[in-house]
Length: 569
Image (cartoon, rainbow, N blue to C red; front, top):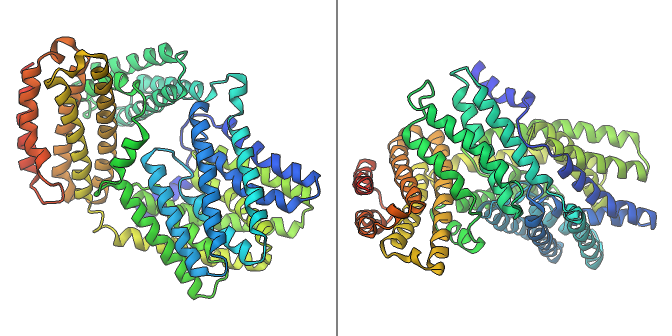
């Protein structure tokens, strides 16, 4: 029991490593400040807070290079306005509004997960649906709500991409610098117990850095990142047979191939969405959990005659909308609860101060800045500041009684957490861990089949064929990364059921990386007959429906035959 308690309490005082976020925080704070100050000076202070709902768009893709933000931020803004419109159209219909929150949150969760947009995920889409509904129900003019929110979106786009004015590449520089620091820590680590964790952290930091550099479209960081990646790959190769038991010849092969694959950039968005919408998939499971948790939490709050049940629904979204193992999501629920409880105390203190308008504006801007600084470092602490931020904006928009806010938010927090935890526990059967592992491994098999088909049919001899082949390589690499992540989470949730399939997934990864390595070797790439034979051996896996039960040993035997053919090269 003491160990379990410590497991939940330690993250509250922990400090996670990660790239510096001061410029991200500054952009978010400025995007919030611009409409608040402008409308305040014009004598329309409340409208500034209405605009704040559109400003939430600045948080989407905030850690991405500016080139990607030019796409993500406007699209997020349009999504927020559409969500708010849906909430407004259902004014006076609280249960339908909860269903609308579930719908918008589900769509947003699937899209942000499939396209790897990252935090804050589905939360703000659900929140603005609820706030828009409450504001319109209270008599606010829908055109006013949407008009000022649209101005907030404009502020988010202008400020959120402002580093483009200066030709800055701060995100890429920060990611590469962080990768250099983490790799150096791995190279310097001598404690055998700490080396595996340091190696995994270095691999993750390198992957993040390469993604940032390719998203940014600038070649100025390529040489610098290539050098640090070579140092890391060399260190992994030297570690084979050493105290780090996880380092094998296969792992060294993976790390050598990684730089070539990740430097190709992201697959097309359409392909990523098609993969996500193919059941079974973790993206659809996240969406199902979000929908169920939102509707349950909101419905319970309504049955308790809570006129502002949207907070319970939105809070439930916060717990389940980013996926992960059940354990990690339960930890997040605990951290959210603790952070919100302390955040309610902070909000109470702010109410007692009875601050004038301009002090309130300053505090909202400061809270936004602090939240963005802390969100990746200490989640619970970030929530302490996020709660009063959301409540101050909510109070200004909806005109709620402050005592009601405090009582309702405390109760709604418990309802939201309870609904989310219930859904996590019950949905284990729907998202059977071994089925999810097999489903994502199947996606690797299909992507591998595309790459083998290119090589077997010599499609790489033309420019168009090579371009299509590189697309297939990108897709295979992304599926390998996602399959490994899903497998790790599945193993954490159901170790006994998943362990045999995890070994199968690892052999599949070894085979796929072997093929990816072959694509960069003209001699091996030209052995079309060998690739055709490997593809024939793989056909047994591509033809078998993944939803039909199949023994892990049987799948592993087929993979061994594919691997045996490829190692003849």
